[in-house]
Length: 230
Image (tube, rainbow, N blue to C red; front, side):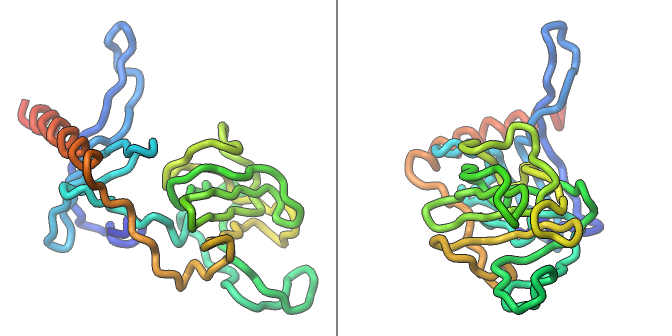
């Protein structure tokens, strides 16, 4: 499922989520979504939150397959693709130069999301890129986010992030003519076209990790039924 495109009007859903209380048993906040039931296009899908052995929280179906693609093509909501991947006339330098990413025009301060689960390798100013973040997702893929206005609180080198976490905000730092996000996907340390790449599938659980997931999923579903019918 592509959560950026498949969720449309008349999609039906129910969720089970955590409610956090203080010592006086007063509701003080809401926690994570633990269970999702989606009905769209005549299909019913169920997903369970699970912490994998490598320490990331994600959502899996009953068979233990991750419901998301491992990397997002567009790590920003409501933005316009303003410059594609490939040769172009550089807007500042004035001559043709390879553009090794894609640009999304968006209002200053628009949230930018982590394209996938991973560990931040770099979060600082980086020359013409301005304020810049690079995330390592696995041994093959990395993503880059540039010209940011600033970083989300807590974002720093070595921090683990989950796909969809806010990591920064659209800006125009570095060599830039206006607010936009410059986004790169690297495969084996070489930039590739995010718009044309075949998205890698999410994780599929197996072995003892799958067995642990099944046990936790049963417990989550039992709590969901209890709250549904109490």
